Image 1 (tube, rainbow, N blue to C red):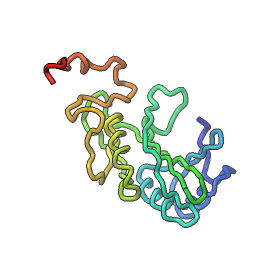
Image 2 (image 1 turned 135 degrees about the vertical axis):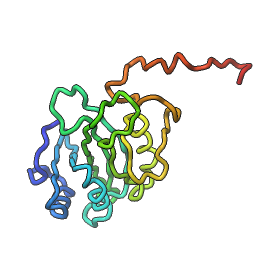
Image 3 (image 1 turned 45 degrees about the vertical axis):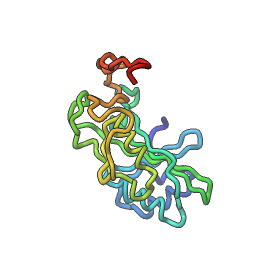
Length: 189
C-alpha cells in the first residue's frame, strides 16, 4: 500500500478536489496504487462524506459495489488503526471508481465477543440500501458494528458463534467449533 498523502497532493481524481472543498475542516488523506485511488476519512466523518459522494452532481457515486474490512494486525507498515472498513464506490455516469476507507482501533482485547465501543461506524444503508448484507458480513467476520443498521445480526455464522473468524488473532483451526457439530446422515435429516 502506498503511503498516505494529503488529499491536495497531485493525485489525479475528480472527486478528491470536490470532497476537500466541501469538507475543508476535516482530516482527509488519499493514496493511489496502480491507478486506484483511496480516500481515507475519519470514522466520525464517514457518513456525511459518503452522502456527499453520492449526492454531489460532480461526484455521483450512485453504486456501492462492496463493503469489506481488513485486519492490519502485525502488518509490516504502521497503519492508522488495526481495522479498516473499506467501501468500493462506482459512478455509472463517469465509469469511475473510488475506494473510501476508515480506520478503527480496538480499545479492549479482540479475542472475545464483547462489543468494543471503539469498533463502531455509521451504517450507509440509508444512502445505499444494498449495504445491508455486506455490513452484516463485516460485523459477523470482524466484529465491527454499524450504527443505525436496520438488521445487524450475524449472516454467515450462527447467532451464538463465540468470535469473529476473520480477525487475525482468531486461531486458524478455530476454537473447537467444528468438533462440536452433530453429525447428520441421510436418515437423520
